[in-house]
Each structure stands twice: as structure tokens, then as C-alpha cells.
Image (cartoon, rainbow over all chains, first blue to last red; front, top):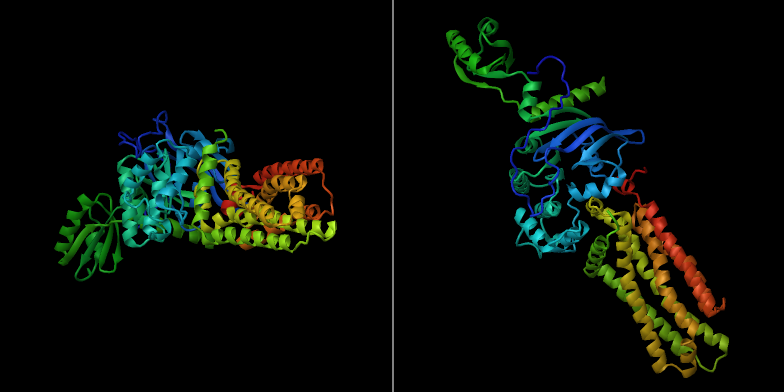
Length: 346
Length: 244
């Protein structure tokens, strides 16, 4: 049941991060960055010729936050990440990444403070896990290379696989190596681009566990995905992109914002005159027929539920269940994306 | 952030490790030099010391030309693969996401193709000189050990390799297909090889001064080629396939 009225794009400040666990490695890169946002994006736009990849996108990501970036294929998620990672130059707009202004001259400085794990792990398959990580430790000019590699491998539960050739690893393990690679430089912001794409459920679960543990440690994560359960489970806030930014906020806030609160009632037999029973109840704003009962729009489910139960019993209905409706992030997402599809078709 | 030899080294070491585990690369690096040590030997031992000077020089010139084919062709396939190959394998983006500068990336790639080429080319030339000293007729040996021949080999081996590498990397940076890149990079080495063929076959008579002059010119061309390759190296195009 969709809440009436327009659907504004809201941009709320990032939640305050009150505590931060120890970084993955010993050297923290966050010194001097406290109190700032990890990522600030203002009216950022990227065109490829006539084609618009993303347009007028603005948001902020706080340090220690896990920020979900959702959208359908072709919405511009990966292009946004690549732009923030200085691989692509924005057409217009501005951004600050890890406290550094996004511009071509600052490319190496930004890239030294962030990590991006692309959708494809992109490992050198003839090299061992250790050799892959050694290469990237060199590219970041890290000290204590062996120590950092050991800690990164431990963080992804691969401490005993350092000598394995990457080509011999399963897809899930390769993804873990890619994650270890992304953690090597203690990034101020870790961009994960579709980290579970193409993985089976077990491997997906493993990656979720790893991201969850990073979240516990206070690592700032920018997660692009179109797996909505993944975002709902892992992210403090999410943004939904469909070329333009459609919505941004905490998952439960988005649900409340997009959908009215409601009760689902299942009854054995339908009421003869439901409007007479449900229509005038205190706290009930409206009702509609559902396949096995009724869905009631309510202002406060805790006040409305007992009233509804009493009214139904009074009307002689056999109540099978009475519960508050649970809209998932998927409902929010589909609602918005369907709006876009309908708008395009008009 | 300034130019970093640590990042260059990381790329070079990674490339060399990758070559070592790649049967195709090992095969190419073994078969080609083997071929180009056998063919000159045949030329050398077929040469009759009593034949006229022109014919003798032709035999020796051909033998030495085979030596120069190694630095011209051996790094071509390696450098042609260097960027388009990584792009096809999906390994380019993770590298470009690091703080590495394009100059560092290109030098790292070039050194990885350069080092084994030079080692192999000089070893093959050393074997050839040793074989000439041990088994060839003294007149032939004397002709082979002529100062200009040795100088041309020593100077032009690295310079020709440098040219072949930069041509290969340039083609690789702009190509979308590995096979096309490899073919074009081999074609790109032919003009210089043609000049060296004329020198080796004594069509162009080379003095020491001219050899050094040509080497200096080729060095300048190699340096210009590096700058040109750095200019055509476009991260955005490599990642998205779209021109900026």
C-alpha cells in the first residue's frame, strides 16, 4: 500500500560514528580525517557522449558507515564508483573522496587512500595468492609487506592459502583474495562493486560474513549491489540510483517513507460488509481486499490492532492471523524502479 | 606523489613471474632463439673462406641479421599482450585503481619485456661468437669480430628491442583484440629491421661513427616513443572502451 503524495529524494546526513574498532592493519589511514565525511558528492554527472551514465547525483558517506548503492543494471552504479575512484573523469559536479578533492591531479593521492574491489576479482591466475598480494602491496608502496599480507589473509580467512595458485581457487575464494587485496592498504573508503555477483549461495554467505565483520570493525564501505537483501542486511543507509538518485536513507526509513504502515488480516471467510466493520475504526485510515483477507492502512499498528481484532470478532469473523505488514527494501526498490519504467513508457 | 621505482618494480616482477608460468611465453622464448642460433650457424659453416669477399660478407651479414631478429621479434608478442591481454583477462582495472602512474605502469611493462629479451639476445650472440672463434675458418672469424659488426650488435640489440616494445605497447594500449595487436606490433618493427638488414648485408656501409650516430637516433626515437605511448595511454578508454 503506497503512501500518497510525492516521493522526494532525501539526503540526510550520515549517522555519527561514535566508535571505531582497530583497523585491519596497524597503520590507520584515518588520522586527520575524523569529523569529515568519507565521501561527499555534489551534483556529480557523467556522460559518455550523448549517453547519460548518471546525472546530478549528490550524497554523503560518513566514516565507519556501510553505504549501499542500489540500482538496476545500467543505472550508473559502477560508473559512479569508477568516477569516485578517479578512473573516469566526471562531466560536471564535484566530489571529495577520503578528504581529497576529486580532480585529475589528485588521482594518485585518492587512489592511495581508497580501495576498489571490482565486480570481477581480476587476479593473476598463474600467480599464487601471496604473489598477487605482493604485487599490489608494491603498487601501494606499503611497508611491512609480509605482515600486512598475513593480516589481510587472516581477515578473509585465507591464512593457509597463501601459496595456492589463484587459478586453482574456486570463484568464492578468488573473491575473498580480491577482498584481501582491497584491504592491504587500510583504505579510508572501501568500494565493493557487486561483491557477490555470480557467486553461489554458500560463497555469497561467506562474503556477507566478511563484509559484516568489516562493518563491525568500523571500515567505511561503499557497497554497490542489486541484491536487496544484501543491502538491507549489511548497510546503515542505502541510495537507489536509476541514472539519477531516486532515494537515500536508512532502509526502514525508506520503507516508512514510501509505504504507509499497515496490518495484514487473514480470515477464514470474507466479511459480508467489510466497510461497515473496518471503515470507521479508530486508527484505521483505509482498507483493501487481499487474497486471503484484508490489508488495512493504519496510523499506529499497536493502537489499531486490538480495535481491529475486537471488531472482527464482534462481526463473527474467524481470525487466522493479524500482523503488521512487513515491506522489504525490495518492495521499496521495485516501487521506484517500476515508477521509472512507467515514466519512460509514457 | 612522485615517480616511484617501487611501483615499477612491482609491475616488472609480476610480469616476469607470469612469463615464467606461461608455457606459451616460455616456448616462444626458447624456440625463437634456438632457431636464430641454428640458422646463423648454418650460414657460418656453409661459408667458404676462399669465396670472394662480397659473398663472404653476405653470409656473415645474414648470420648477424638473424641475431637482430631476436630483439625485434621476441618482445613484440610480450608487449603486444601487455595491456590488451590484461584488459581481456580483467586484471587491468585492479591495477589502474592503485596509485600507479601511467609512466610507471608503462616502464614496468617495458622492462619486463626488455630484460629477458636482452639477456637471451646477448647469450645467443655470445654463443655465436664463441662458435665462430672455435669452429669457423680464421678468415671468417676475423670478419665476424670486425669492430663495426660487434658494435652494431651490441648497440642495436637493446635499441631495437626498445622500439619493438614501445610499438607493441602502443598497439596494445589502443587495440581491442589481442591477435590484431600481436600482428600489428610485428609489422611495426619491420621498418627498422629493414634498415638493419641493409646494414648487415653491406648495402649500406657502416663506419663506427655512422653506427654510433644511428644508435643515437634510435635512442632518441625510443625515448620519443615512450612519451608518445604515455600520451595515448588513456585510463578511461581502457576501462570503458569509450574515447574521452
